[in-house]
Image (cartoon, rainbow, N blue to C red):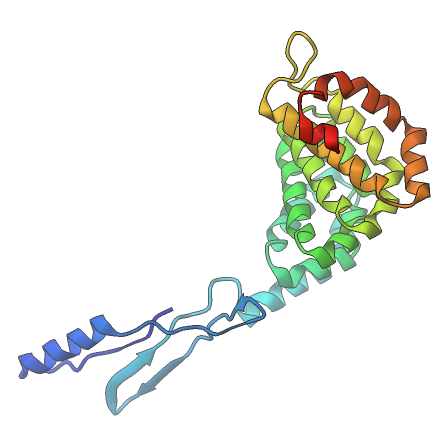
Length: 274
């Protein structure tokens, strides 16, 4: 943000005009103070004196950050529950699109999660649409980017929704899903829920037709290696939980899964290590 003063508009004195123009050019930027690593949003101000042509003009707040904007977003989130709970696919599509836009603002994230709308959105057939699946994942990622919110956004229906997205067998959607799950697995308090039904989804993604394999059945391409790296990293994080989480993984077939892929990953040290 910058600050400048209007020069005197005096046609009778060219030298004075030139001096004022030079002042305008050399005005120094206003430094905004920061606290806690966050940059303060400048407040819209305009101090003008009718008797004086020298008016100070300061920068305005970025669009969407005014109190009026925040109040509007708060009102929207507070009144969207009937739309999310309707159960109709079209209402679900509108809900996801709106929440995706709102999730870009920090002041809306807590309200979105606490409203229960994420759990209320019916899986239905709406996640067969790649654009809606990405909108949901974008919203989820925006909220889960906060360490505090990461432990609040996960619920018992989350993996079910992710699984519905992966039925489309779109490689980009699948990669985004497992990256999202990996982010969730980095919070210790999420491991209990993730141990319940995450492994079948990971196995589904790995055996998907969209998996990039060559003719010999071995890994080919960075995308497949990246996908497998995140799958193994998720399983590693869950296995770092207590005995209950570990036993659930074993009962779901994680040992057989590792045995099946071992031949393919022996040449990838970091995956072998995990």
